[in-house]
Length: 322
Image (cartoon, rainbow, N blue to C red):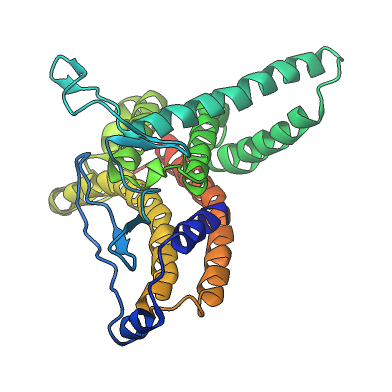
C-alpha cells in the first residue's frame, strides 16, 4: 500500500496540460516505454512520460542500479570494477546494499530474541516482542523444519530459520518507498538456491556415506544384470537432472513471484496514462492498493515456501534410498 501511495504521489505531481491537450491525449494515449535488460548490474529503467515529457520511474523497486534513491537526494554508487578483490568485482550495487540491510535486520531481530530466550530459561521476564518472535520461530522449526527433515532436523534448523527471516526482510524492503526488492534479481535468488543446494548435498553425503552415490548413479540390485545396466544408462542422467532442477526451481519461483507484483502494479497505474485522464484514477489506485496488500502477503508466503521446499529437499536427501 505504501508503494502504491508513493507511485500515486509521483503521478499526481506530473504536470497537467490544457483541456485541448488532454483531449489529444485521450485520442492518442501516451504509452509507457518499457525496456528490459537481462543480467549484469546495468539496467534500463521502466519509465512513462508525463504531459511535458517528464519521465516517471515505476520499477525502481525491482531493478538493480548504480544509484541509491532517498527522499532527499539520489546518491551515485561506485562504478563497476571500483572494488576488486582479485578477479572478483565487489563493487556494491543497490541490491547489494539492501541485501546487507536485510542481513542486519535479521540479526537485529534474532539476536535480541535469543538473548531474551536465555533470560526466559533462567526465570526472568522475556517480554512481548520475544514472545511474538518465539512463536514464529517455533512454528517454522516445529511445523516446517522438523516435520519435513525428520530426526536430523535440529541440525538444519538454524540455517533454515536464518534463510526464512533473511528472505522475508529482503522481500519486505521492496514494499517501502525508495526501497528495492533484491529477491526480484535472479542473481540473488540463484545464490540463495546454490547455497541451499550445497547444504542439501553435503548433508546427504554426511547422512548416507557411501550410499550417497546411489542418489547420483542409479543401480537397482533387484533387477537382472542386463536390465540393471540399461536402467543405469537411462536413469543416471535423470537423477543428475533432478538434482539440478531443485535449486533452479527455488531460484526461479522466488524471483518470478517477487517480480510479478510490481509488474502488475505498473500495468494498473499505467491505465491512468493509457486513457490520458485523471478522472479514472480512483479505480487503478484502489486496485493498486489491493495488489500492494497482496504483495505483503506474498512476501511472507514466498519466504515460507522457499524454506518449506528447502526443508523437503533436505529431508529427501537425508532419507533417500535406492
